[in-house]
Image (cartoon, helix red, strand yellow):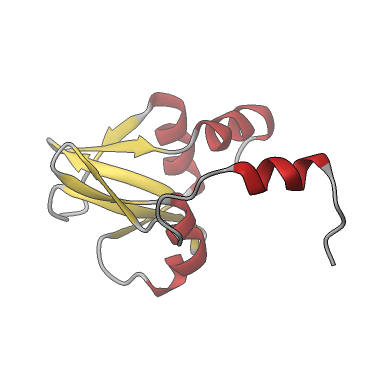
Length: 114
């Protein structure tokens, strides 16, 4: 079980507005899937998903965008690398824009793509 600690007391003091897991956020007129839902249910995504090679993912993380030749509609897409959900991207104006969390980009800069 969980033992009493200062961290537990701090967590109990947080006021919850809506319990549950955030799935989507509205960003500039689009619905953006959250990283949490992509990690938990990304294996179920069959539409609006791009499979990138390690080289393509590397360029996307370094430059922030790459040319999009997928033919998918503009909007948010799930990006996979090696079949594993890597994060979220935005197709806009013929480009794929990386929308990765800061921690993911920092880990990439430090360790590279596995």
